[in-house]
Image (cartoon, rainbow, N blue to C red; front, side, top):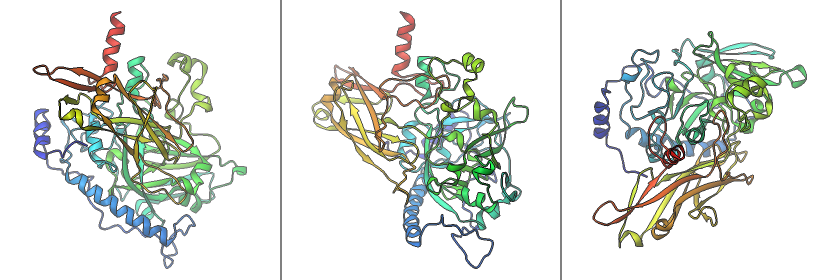
Length: 513
């Protein structure tokens, strides 16, 4: 991991980019919530919803102990952050009131705001990502809302349609707090765009973050409202946010999941109101959002306003025109003409298996001399899978896949009582420097408990979704000074419109031929 980042250097960096270190004045800044209480159970209060979903006292004690460890990680991470600011790049947009971390890499220009952190900075913080560095996927302006005025409505195929205030969600229901890794289905999309342009923007390898989420189990709300059975048509649970889509005639972002997912206690689906021990940040759904562990981020509706139990799936534009993996021969024109967007077999819900090399970083230089040649070099990275499946193996090859070295894998989370793993893990491998010197590239692949692994080659699709081919880092031997030899490492690309990466060089060569 890189060394600690000095605040003064970060302040200087912001000043160089014309971003002043302003004093935070927004009412949505990251502050503790001393006025709110979060009861697990209270038999003396008849409004508390008692549910078998709650863990035993013994489980609660274990969860509390581990969550205290996470809170220590959060405290340390926050202490290393520079203050978020009103970024000058948001001036003249509907988001000019939102405070953001200046190091986030913007992927879609000014507005809407879509960003990821620098990969090495994300990895510096380890298991728990500080909220200001969490990747952001917005489809339109960030809605403004207040805790006191916000309500979440549950309606549709339920016996009792109800609206819940935020205080009711906090005080009248059990809570669940757990770490969850969120991943955009477009993570690593730029690799696909370098082969052939998709209809998505250039995510790098840092569209992934892990934070501690607290909220109300979705099934508790649905049971309170008396959700109907499948025989009575209750097949899907739809979520609708408050964010208005640009050019969408006032339509809101929405999606849906099957009722069986929504009501499964092993899925740990919650309506979250806290992240890393504080109220949600504006970019992450304040005051309420869905968290569906093991699913792609596109199902986790932010700024949640309505939950509707229906027979049909969501009718939202983005439920059909996004988050699908179509066959490689289907381009945008064919998808529109032949209705490929509406074929249910291509929808994405659960994440697939994936892994990335994070050390060495892009353009890291390893000098080769009599001392370094005798020292081991440690490769590092992250891996994750979907649906609660545990990553059981990570392997590295330095000879194009002829032989594989098994890495050490660390899972900072404990499995849930249902045996689920909702978070990324970290892998490392010590290799000989002379081995790196003779290698042309380093590649990684991961396996999960169902023996799913990553494909060798990239599989292009029109949305640029779910790219999980082997992650490859090239090794280039150079002579930087006075005849000394060094290895320069090169990642596939850099996120957004940034240049750099071996895929860009290869593309230039292909065009020139």
